[in-house]
Image 1 (cartoon, rainbow, N blue to C red):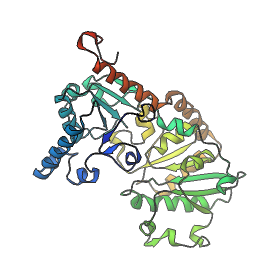
Image 2 (cartoon, one colour):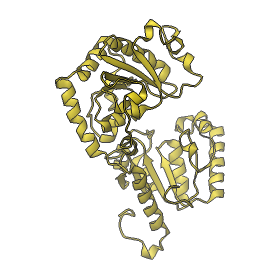
Image 3 (tube, rainbow, N blue to C red):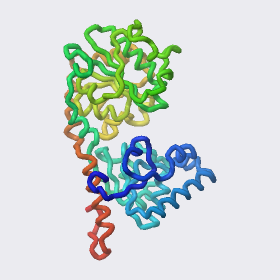
Image 4 (cartoon, rainbow, N blue to C red):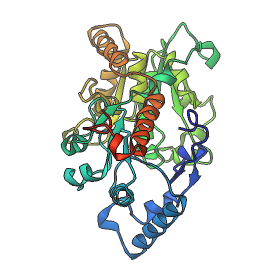
Length: 363
């Protein structure tokens, strides 16, 4: 919004990523989370008082439009408040499996004017509520298309296959998942034809948390036998993916990036498959394009599956063919498309009632 409309002033409850924007800060996200405002069952007198303070700050700012990223109980209460002010409410769905349990579709339809998102079909909640939904494309596609590096520029050998592992960046999950990724890295590193790279991000001051059998792996010297043929890289995820032959990942945005690059990968999930697709790529496509693997599977089984996707053969060729659909289905320019729909909603809202278009506001 700021890029296309420099005079727009934003006000928001900001997280680690959005905190770097030019928007003014409203409330405190960790405080909202600690008070349990996202969960109706956790609301207390303290939570209610904090919510009233948020509304007071919003009223002082007199915003023109509300954009809700994801949809929890807090989002729903804010949407009701914005609706009472006759303000347009736009729901931006980051994934179709947002925190929306317990919210009746009929109530959502009453308070949300428009939904946009990076999944092709939108969430079941939005569809049931019959809220106008627009697929804006994938912000990942714009980033992927700009990556152009060589293996040598990353200190790697372009003549050997590069296998990269991405345990993920979620602070609460990384220590739990790291031992499995490390053991897979060690087993793959026994193959001299492979270069194994473990990609870790946001580790400042947390190296001691990554333990395997009580040993802080990152404290081991590079020459230690346990780190033989394993390189550890911080950041540069997209660059590393672009020169890789294969990747083992978590279930987050990295799965979309692998898909857009046409890179065979193996996503690991700790959640039960019965709860639906967990990998973000499968979620945004609305179908299980890529098989997901449970972290509870035996190490040898996971290793066999990985090798079948690294080595030339039927499994790798099938996945390469399947991934061709990703770049076709996920369009780019997500930010520009989002601004266009939001800007259109503001313009229609500002029109006199006699001039407003008939039918859906987004028509």
